[in-house]
Image: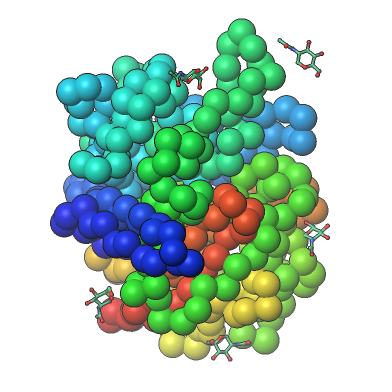
Amino acid sequence: MRSFIAFSLIPLLTSASALALFTVPLTKLQRTGTYLKGSPDADRARAAFLKRRTASGPVAIPATNLAYVQYTTRVGIGNPPTYYNLVIDTGSSNTFYLDQVTLAPNLVITNQSIGDALSNAGFQGVDGIVGVGPVDLTLGTLSPDMNATRPTVMNNLVSQGLIKNKVLDGALTYGGTDSSLCEDESMYAPVTDTYPAAGYWGINITSCAYGKHTVIRSSTAGIVDTGTTLILIADDFFARYLHAIPGAKVDSITGLIEIPQRSISSMHSLNFTIAGRVFSLDVAAQLIPKDQNTAWGGDVKKRYGVVNHLGSPSGQGMDFIIGQKFLERYYSVFDADSKRVGFARTNHTFSTYQL
Ligand SMILES: *[C@@H]1O[C@H](CO)[C@@H](O)[C@H](O)[C@H]1NC(C)=O
Ligand SMILES: *[C@@H]1O[C@H](CO)[C@@H](O)[C@H](O)[C@H]1NC(C)=O
Ligand SMILES: *[C@@H]1O[C@H](CO)[C@@H](O)[C@H](O)[C@H]1NC(C)=O
Ligand SMILES: *[C@@H]1O[C@H](CO)[C@@H](O)[C@H](O)[C@H]1NC(C)=O
Ligand SMILES: *[C@@H]1O[C@H](CO)[C@@H](O)[C@H](O)[C@H]1NC(C)=O
């Protein structure tokens, strides 16, 4: 993903009505040291929290489970606004009391419900969360009325006439999509009806293959989550993937897959089929770039992978999490109006660097 220097407004004419799109700056936090060390465990802890949600009962995700998130946006709270760096989280929906929220100079929501994460989030460079998950995720998070939901940022943008469509893309365009970032048409998968994935931006993966090896045999539900760093798949799926890469093992220091250098040149693409289209992660996309090994607490001479285990077996209604390592490669669309998630190829999908 890229950071945009300036706010841009792209008007499109659709059957005589103008739809406003607002693309706001998205920033990758620049940090040093072993700041990603522990991310696989943090991702799994988050997965366990997310899985506890059932059709009837929601769960609250502790903000600390987002400690490793890297993408933030500057959001103004109050009038005049005080600016904070907030994480964009598709896995939660509460954005913190009621106040004015400035997403961009011309994109100001009045009376937005805001949680108190601002006062205690306490992770470096980040002040809180913009929850852009489904509105039902706010159910049960409000006291005393546990049956109430709170309008999310997306709900208020539409009800206050600021955008027409409850659509957000991964480049942080509110109100629609930006096809200039895509190299093919977006493919849309309906939000799955399988719980607990159905409570989030959940979709089904129809199958997944690593070369000739089947990793996922039949349609299975999971979620797309900007708050998860890696790509997590159920433990049995993960075992098949790991077994298919000669000499690969889980490294006890980083918690990542460690792949022997001699196996790299014979690695295959990892192909996910979603709604009839194949989304391929080439070899480079499956590996942590070498110059990031130190950040993950790894050895500069070794090779590590971005796919990891979920911490639970398949068949539980949330069998994978498509996290940042996938979303950095494919354009994504979160369409709350049509209850669907879209993906398209970008010019980063098959970016390579020295293997
Ligand atoms: C502000 O939002 C709250 C809760 O979302 C709602 O109950 C209230 O009516 C709203 N007030 C105004 C002035 O829109
Ligand atoms: C919430 O809804 C349930 C079932 O619809 C009801 O039994 C309960 O009293 C409600 N709770 C509140 C605080 O309104
Ligand atoms: C990738 O696409 C973006 C957005 O369209 C463009 O700004 C950038 O120059 C492209 N990069 C390459 C390497 O083509
Ligand atoms: C995986 O996807 C790549 C790129 O689309 C394609 O070249 C390759 O044949 C696919 N492999 C399998 C086993 O489907
Ligand atoms: C999605 O996957 C679940 C299993 O996780 C399955 O029960 C359901 O039938 C699938 N839905 C579709 C539309 O394939």
